[in-house]
Length: 339
Length: 295
Image (cartoon, rainbow over all chains, first blue to last red; front, side, top):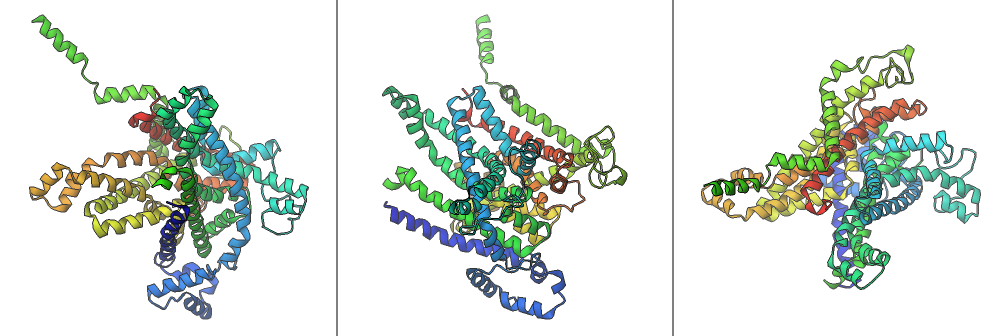
């Protein structure tokens, strides 16, 4: 199968999925609450007939359900996710403003997480049942068993409050001004501006939350790497590679890693869901002004439109990432190309 | 004669070990499972007897002694209203453990039924149910649970319902596959030809033969359910703020960052419980999956 056909096939598969997500979100937003007006408008607007009438009209609440859905979809396509009850601002704008911060954090987090997870898994598999394997597995177990908010609080206490070797809450030192906005990601914008001091400060604010995220997702990644590699190590072609006289480093690095990579890539895609949830819990502790912190504050104050907006966005991101993973299979798994 | 009896006794020696012997053997080889079992049983016991052993009521305030560091009076310190954290942590087990178990029981039953019906009915019903399953799997499940809880209104019952509502898809998938396999067995055909109704065959003949993997998955899942429930209540989509629920206590503790005992002890309570269940689940997987057994 050539790449183009594979790609098109995946795209065709993803469109109904995205539409399905909007249907689910629509049902949650409109069918579950006893009264969508109550759920979506601030309490003091509930006495105001005009506001209520405008809300009904905008979301087509006086029309049958399927037309309501189409109105909802139309509003969504225009980038309208409703208005936040807490902040009185359009949810889509709020999200757009905070998204770069979260992308910055999540990217660094997943990079650390992959290095840590694959590294631990490799150590575990190569020196199976040794003390190194044991330590690596305990770290992985802590990653999956300790609530991520506890890890975040412990890191913050230890490395910021006690040792003072990392920056604390927020994105930048209070007295520093953010770099001129290009991407919205402070580290990149500071670099583009040639401002090394701001870059350093922004990066040091990212390290602790990113490490927390990394520990959180590395548990599951290292487990899969370990079991997948262990399975590959017992294969006949590994023995053949060794019998050919290849160095152990090459046997594991080339024959072993490549063949055990497919399940690892799958689980990295799936752990992106954890990463998104983790960003809510971690950003709220580090007072890091991204989407996660927004979601945290929205849900503690029951800001329903904001919660729905973020949920929808996270579902889209999750589907998008797993779409990329599907595309990666094409390059990783030669069986797809032959089939 | 003696030779015959010696043969029979030697045959006896080679008889395969009983199930309890096998279980003991595996427990000895997986000390972490035993460790997990002990901690889990301890927590469950605490959940039952905490009203008797907690020094004070979880909601009892003592404003004179607010924000006390751990001392002999307040073993784990006191919070911003002078409530005893130790008592609250003990009481918290009565919320979190039943909530986690309820999510698993409701969610897995839902999945088992949906998957079984899909596999057994086949055709359009199967197609519809499986597309629905895929759709639910496309959401990061905690996010979906957050949206559902927010729509229902935050409280313990709704958090449990929301988590159960997003918990079923994996169970549905597994069960469908197993039902498809068992469906074509001869004994199922026999049941049909004996005149048993479709529902009877599905629930009395097929299901008992494919329930075991779902039970195992459920055991593996308890830790995740507990931690997900704690995450929901951490972000305010669970019990009300005064509740001694662990996730909620940590979340309130953030505002009192320097009073580390306010967030550390409830956090460790979650961690120890989840870790115990994960130890049990991991060991169970090692025992049942011979490929992962360390030879």
